[in-house]
Structure formats: structure tokens, C-alpha cells
Image 1 (tube, rainbow over the protein chains, first blue to last red):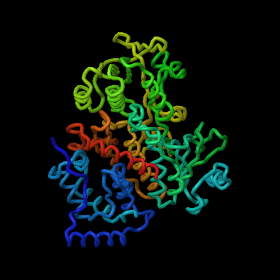
Image 2: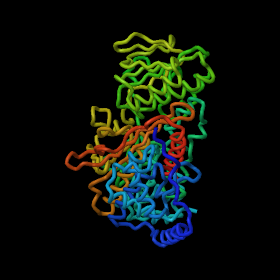
Image 3: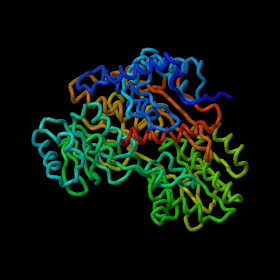
Image 4: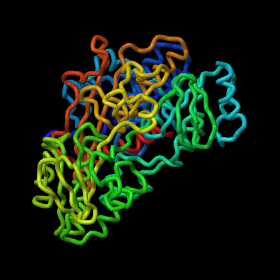
Length: 122
Length: 426
């Protein structure tokens, strides 16, 4: 029987990991630009990312204290690593292997970049 | 065009409709496009929020919904089973206005003029729009089952297929039923709202009986040839958890009911009697879509252009959610209505801003079903628009169902509900 271990959790906080985490958060805060009207690519990326929102919150801001994690502000490398691991089956899952197999690697990278750039809500 | 906009503006600035939240977002301006959304369910509320969000609040959105709070159909089976309360599945609409500047009007639309681009509210006002989104959900074709309309009106045979007061009314019927009695759920032929919903309801009621009324029985009378969704998982759960307490009978298409004797008559099979009869009527698109001439699929569902969910019967009128003629493998679910809403919102924003509509939209669906208080199974799918076929297709190799029922998925189901409510309303 395949069981997902725990809900997606951030990387283990070794010293350098923690630093990377902080750097990523700071970068996300700077990059999280306000909604730009009339930007076709940005509109498409936001629409693509909105398909994750039913489970992981609008723009990755999941309701806190629940079993499905907040994607906003997680490091981009971490997100893409997990999404690809779900897709290959390297990381066991209940649903995420079925979802990620519907997306191309380029789309998963686009999503990782988008969620990493969102500033986590306070 | 200008005149139309002035009518809506007049309504808004006049404050006659009690519109909250517009002042803080700068109010309206004459050159802003106006979108009217009819219906505040999973589709309507989501499209209202996302048009505001994706346009950087540059498009005015008015949402007309008679109910003053959002009562979720997903999870409502757990209220019927006694595992949750109405408060657990009820959320306010206030976030749409205060956070997103949607003008939420608690009224009903009684008529739409697709040529003049106006809508008439039950309160008497006329509202003009540049784009209309209808999210009317389902209505019932009462006459398909003889006697059902009257039995329902008398409160004797309920459907509880629109969450609200009827959800609790069915709960009370189950509480009042003697131990040793039979609850029967009668399922119409697909397509109907929420494919796994009837089987989930049967399961959680069986869980209630097992604890509180152990001599009682659940009878599933299905108009379909087999369980419509997650069949093997549901059947295994019934066998493992409830034994003889749950009985499944396929090929039972109801044609008449008798509330007095508690009897259902079927097209082919013999009559069945039960103490609590829960009959799901045959469904079709909400009445407003039908009366507006949009139900052009067998006079029942609404054909749409899947690139932007525009009706194939009227320009600038979009239809989303359970009311549409679905693409293959696309369920009528709250999650899917929320997905329709996002494709539609992005397309409307693009059209009104004069940029190209995404030629390759995608939608996802996840339906979680409880098989008892603490175990859940899911079905998931990912769909892409295929330009050569002009419809959505499920993507090969993606999607699927649970390996097994699990308590882990029950925790995910809780989180799914909290997050989709937030994504739809807050």
C-alpha cells in the first residue's frame, strides 16, 4: 500500500538551508510585483497557477493549520524538485503523482517560479 | 454603450442595492467594463473574485445571488450523516466585497435580454452589462418521476441535492426513523450533479446507522448500470465496513413515487418500499439558462465554447458550472465549476483588455468522498483544451483514483474544503 509520508514540508533546516530559505524569502518579497494589467504572459501564468488553488490556496496562500501546504514563497528549486519527484513516483503520494503527470516540465517550472515569487501572507 | 453603463453606474452610486466595498477600491468610472455574474455558487463566486484579481481590479463585477451566505454542497453529506453541522459548511460572502470589491447583491435575476445586454432583478431594477456570466447551477425536471413534485413540496420525499434547509430536513427524517428501518436513495441516470455524491451519502448514512441504529439498512437504487464514480472503492468500503447493512441495486430507473405508502416504482424492476425515501430528481441547467434560450443541448444543458465558456447561443454570455454540456470525462462538481470559472475569468479579462485569449487553457478536478467518518477516497483528473477538437480532453497518463481508502486522505479532504472555500470566497 502506497502512502504519502507527510504533507509537503519545507527542506530540512540545516545552517545553509536556513540561509537559502531566508534569501529566497527576501527575493520573493522584492519580486512579488503588484498585478500588472495587460500582460498576456503574466495573465496566463496566473491562470495556470490558479489550478493549484483549490487545494493550496489562491496564489499559493493555503489556509494555515491544515494538511495541505502553502506554496507561496517556498524556494523554487525545492518546489520543482518535489513536483518532478511526484511525477516520476520517486516521492510517493495519494494525488500529486496523478496531477503532475498532466503537466509538462516547462509548465511545472513556470509554476515553481510563480509560487516561489509569492510573498507568504502574514 | 454609454447609456447602458450609466444605468448600472446609477444603480451603484445610488446605493439602492447596498453595495459594499466599492468605495475603498475607488468606486466606478464610466470607462470601466462591467461584468454581471448571476449565481454565487462555486462557479459564480470564483469567477467574480478572479475577474477582479486577474484584471488588477480594473473591471467592475456585480454578483447577484439570493442567499446571504454560501452553503457548500461538498461536505453537506456529512451534515446528513450527523458528522458535521450546517455551521461547518456555511461561509459568508463578505470577503468578495470587502477584499475584492465585488458588488454582491442579494436578489434574483428574473430575466435576461441578450440583445440589449440587460438583466432584470426580482427587486425591479434593470442592470446593464458588457459581459454576462451565468452560473445558475441545476434545476429539477420534476415531471420525469410521477408524484415527486407534490411529495417534495409536502416535505415527504426530499432530495437535499442543493445544500441548505433541506440538508437538515433530511437529517431530521433519519433521526426520526425507527431502528430497523430502511433508507433508500434513488439516483437518476448520468449526467447529474456530483457523480460520487449519492454513494458518499449512502456511505456516511450507513456509518450513522452502524453507530446509532444498528438494525437499519441503506438501499441504493441506481438508474445507472453500475456505480458512476469510484465504483470498486465504494463497493469495497460497503462490504468491509457495513456488510449487509448496505445493498446496491443497479438498473433502477425510477418512474413514479407514492409518498403515502413510501413506494418507488421503476421502469423495469419491481416496486421498492422504504421508511425514508431520498429521491434525486432528473436534473438540468438552472431555469434562468433554460428560459434565456441557452440550454441548446437537448433543451437540458448549455453548449459552450470551451476556450472561454461563451454560450454557443448568445454572444458575450458565458455559462459555467453544472449547467453546461460537459466535455468527455468532465464531472459536474464544485471543484470543476471553480476550474471553469478561472478559465472564464482569464478569457474575459483578456477579451476586455484586448489581448489574445489563451489558446491552451487547462482545468483540473478532484472529488473527495467520505466512506465513513474518517476515511476518504478520491478521483482526480487534468484536462487540456485540444484546438483541433475544440473541446477539453483528459491528459493521457494523468489522473486516477485512490489506491485505498485512508485517514490521510480524510485530512486532505478537510484541507481541500477549507482551501476551496477560501479560494472561492475570500
